[in-house]
Image 1: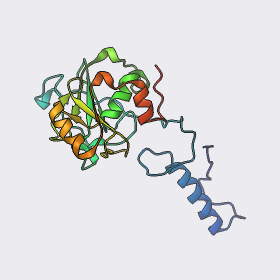
Image 2 (image 1 turned 90 degrees about the vertical axis):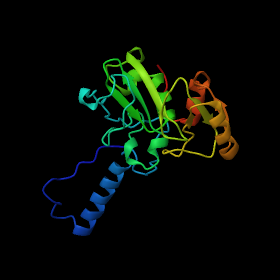
Image 3 (image 1 turned 60 degrees about the horizontal axis):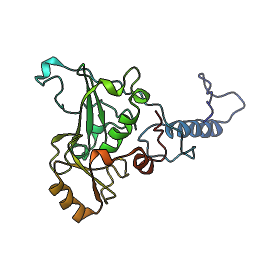
Image 4 (image 1 turned 45 degrees about the vertical axis):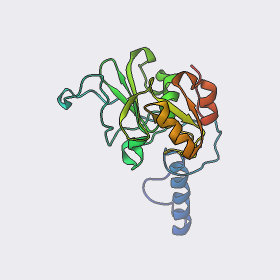
Length: 212
């Protein structure tokens, strides 16, 4: 989208108030299409991405949590992949994910899908960091909302549960029994973390760059 220059001191003398209002409305509508979570569907190149400012959340020693323990998602934390605020959805307790860096800083995600996309190229989404600095990663149990180690969870792909972004967000479960129960009710197949490949992530989120 080309930048729009709007005069700061009111419309020019020859521009009617109605035309001025229409001009401003079009400019604002175009801007809102670029905001993550705006609900708009801009006619953009599907490979284009919105730049999201989502700095890591520092570790708070006063929280009483261990340095690498999972923590509640702060209300102002944004997903560095899609721009959503995971804590602001009623469904987030069963979809959220997080990584903890070795210094205790954390990044929070709206879904396991966003977490796995992030792990493909950490430096792309968090400047100055890389995957070697991640000391722990967690996903929410889709049944209970409890935190699980992401590399020990069982995921379901292709179910009717589409997640916060209305995509195949890979709901996570503590064990295969719970995942099978879910798959019987909602469809899908079970996956271990090692089976969540870059190719699968591209199919689930085709507009996302996953190149290293």
